[in-house]
Amino acid sequence: MKSRRPEVSIPHDSLTLPLRQAARCWPDKTALIEPEAGGRAWSFGELEEASSSLAGALAAAGVAPGERVGLCLPNGAAYVLAFYGILKAGAVVVPLSTHYGQREMAHALALSGAQGLVAEARLWREAAPPQAGGPRLKVAVGQPVPPGILDFASLLNGPPGPDLSLGIDPQAALAVLPFSSGTTGLPKAVMLSHANLLGNLHQNVAARELSEADVMLNHLPFFHIYGMTALMGAAVQVGASQVVVSRFQPVEWFLDLMEQYRPTVLLTVPLVVQELCRHPRLPTLDLSRLRYVNTSAAPLAPELQERFTRLTGVPVTQGFGLTESSPTTHVNPLERVKVGSIGTPVSLTEQRIMDPRTLEEVPLGQVGELWIKGPQIMLGYYHDPAASAATLVDGWLRTGDLARQDEEGYVFIVDRLKELIKTKGFQVAPAELEHALLAHPQIIDAAVVGLADAELGEAPVAWVVPRPGAVLKEEEVIDFAGQGLARYKRLRGVILTEAIPRSASGKILRRVLKESAGG
Image (tube, rainbow, N blue to C red; front, side, top):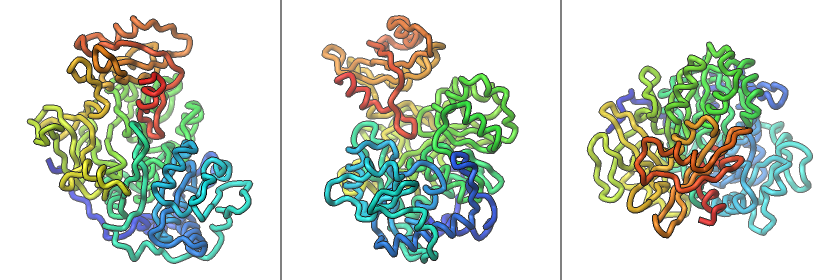
């Protein structure tokens, strides 16, 4: 099915175009505010000028067009400047999680072949592997700057360099080399072109109805594709002001920010919506300027979606995307939100629901694997032709997500194909059990995985986080979660824990849970 939305026009240009245009149209308008830096504000003109100076400094330091430069920073103006500065130097941005450990960082730098690395000064000891062959160009943000490493702040003060991205072929040239979430293994590097990302920016702002009048409270990490494109990039694309923070906790502080800056749009993840709903102060906030809340990156329980709206009067919509699709593929139309659905395809996007075994389209309403096609789909996995061939079929992206669509084209995600638990020949969707567990008044978070079992093949086991002071009994939790479900879906064990391991985007790291249980 093709998207029924009006077709957006995608310029034949590089990913630096949005900042160039914003600086030309709104040079003095506030582009970015940093509450964690004393409320420091940047105009679009300042971002354009400083990022151009950084581009010139990087080129002078030996960064050549097409080379990869790692970017390991928390949210802030420095991230935005480094992102656009690297692109203007003609190089490829390699976003790196600030949560990476030594092994993960070494893997990412080696796989991407990064010749440069921009990182926080305090992270340099862990971010820069000691072995030979690491990045030759090292830049530190913040003080003190370690010996032998360039000071980021000083690189912003030189003359502006030319935008070397202007001469590239946007369809073929890499702009960003992000990493897949790695929920089942080591992350893969995803090749996204300038055209992929610029196209998805246009798809995003049209689907989410963003404009220069919006104020966005951007707290999701920019090193993740969702934060990078749908938050940071989309704000620049339309000339919106973004209030940029690196966290959402403590929740009391985040609520203070919502009161102070009065955002018009909040793009977030279900975990944040859940935490906000638990805070007694939420219903008392003046959210009259907040047009909607949109969640992506993880499934949103319908009960949670309805609860936030009931408490605040603000609609909550759900979207969908993957690193491999730049990321956005689906958004709920604001004029017709369907609870529990990720919405309909964004402009210029096609969808199919396919039988993962026969690779044939399934009848309307039946469950199959969601396939997607559009200008935002990746070029492939870097240095991994086998994985690329398995994921891209005649231009279609196999998402690995089981879903169904209704007669209006709305898609409902059932679960991850690879995360299905196979017990006695039946398939159990972890998300179904997790939604059931989260309905328990004494459970604040939960995850379900399949552990090897001699009799069943795999046994569904839950990790649950009890509410502080709550006393949970295993059989009670098992009985509660199993209400109204088939017997084969019944949990075979419950493990109490203080926290569920999640990726930066809020996805459950099931491999970590399996490893902790020896499964």
